[in-house]
Length: 133
Image (cartoon, rainbow, N blue to C red):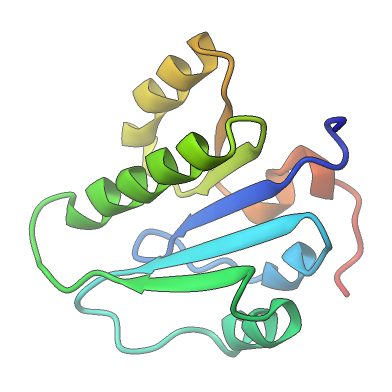
């Protein structure tokens, strides 16, 4: 499988950032997980549109119930590890402005895992210059 057809896993720290361009992810190779904090009661309509387009097999939302410093971040990293274990050949994108993920990203890169953190969905290399569907 080449880099263009590998599954692109996108894990969104929705507590940290609520992307406005989610429909860029409505492509065949993308799988998306939204991590929603305990104090968040709403999501953008665009998130619901993406869920409808990709279906429940390719879009998940994980509602974090417990409050605590970095609780959502730890949950996101747990799910990231499980995904990597199942598919080490995938590409993993954390969408967050939280640079606290960067040491983990570096660690994974040293182990030849394709993992990245982006401040915005449009920064994912496979999506650069892609029109919104």
